[in-house]
Amino acid sequence: MSSEKAKLSEEEMKAYRVQGFTCTNCAAIFENNVKELPGVQDAKVNFGASKVYVKGTTTIEELEKAGAFENLKIRDEKEQRVEREPFWKQKENAKVYISALLLVVSWFLGEQYGEEHVLPTIGYAASILIGGYSLFIKGLKNLSRLNFDMNTLMTIAIIGAAIIGEWGEGATVVILFAISEALERYSMDKARQSIESLMDIAPKEALIRRGNEEMMIHVDDIQVGDIMIVKPGQKLAMDGVVVKGTSTLNQAAITGESVPVMKNTDDEVFAGTLNEEGLLEVKVTKRVEDTTLSKIIHLVEEAQAERAPSQAFVDKFAKYYTPAIVILALLIAVVPPLFGGDWSQWIYQGLAVLVVGCPCALVVSTPVAVVTAIGNAAKNGVLIKGGIHLEEAGHLKAIAFDKTGTLTKGIPAVTDIVTYGGNEN
Image (cartoon, rainbow, N blue to C red):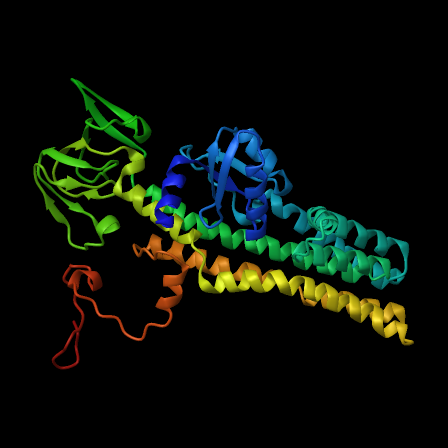
């Protein structure tokens, strides 16, 4: 009953696409910020699908203000997808390149003039500021709220490294963290692209006949009852019923059936299927958001939003693990010097514990793995309805199929050649 209510409330919400998510924690902060916007009754973020559902009234400008802490970009779900630049050209990575260059130059200056010289120190400081300014902003905000996450840990460690004069090591930590963030963005972008590629299965326009006039119309403007004309070799843009013509349709993208299916008058057809032979006239029976393909995409996005058991465990573990690491590092830095140890040495050891103990990879890797797996499976025609089912699939020892077409292409092929006399020619 609760799942039905959740689905109902989600359908009542307006959906927006979000660009710029890097971690589940950032998505949770954004969700809370959106809930606090005036006019918003409720909000729900789907990190895997990179979407936010908003119940109430708001604007894209207000939503972007709510996501300004991570420079999130918002667009209406129905707007055409904007192709992102190649990973190495993205503006977000510019700070990584500049910071890395400064680090290398500063290291050479340190070898030339000594680590204590002012030139390498300035270079390392510039590298830290350029590569870690966004990290510091998040970390200091979290520290003021006593919210200890990976950003807080790294901020304390880097500031501490600067205080004790280890500028080079502080800059190295910043670079490594910035590279890890860039790789996280890359892996999440690839996962989301696999989902968004499903939307490209069906055309965005269709040839529609209204009265005696034929025109190309965007799918958002096609109405139920319109007559769609589909020529041989074209894909169907909408679900409907054949009113005129006979042809075979390749429905593999929708039904998984590998053999083309003959369609006659009154037969149901689906968006995203390929018309192979004859001219068809199809009466549209569903709006674009209600097509079978749209429902499949929606199911995949819902599946990504469902947390796998390992995700729930990791998030819960990190919640207690992170403050425990902070306390342990503090004890290492303070207790030994009280009994005669060297303060500088033990503060250094405490900072090392903070850096090494950061749960960043642990917290990020699990949702990225789940989202990527579900997305890639969907791209290949396999719908996995949630992380829990994905994990269960990993324990399978044997699978039984009851349909030949599920395992074969339905097209005869030469599998073995037995020669007489050893000459295949």
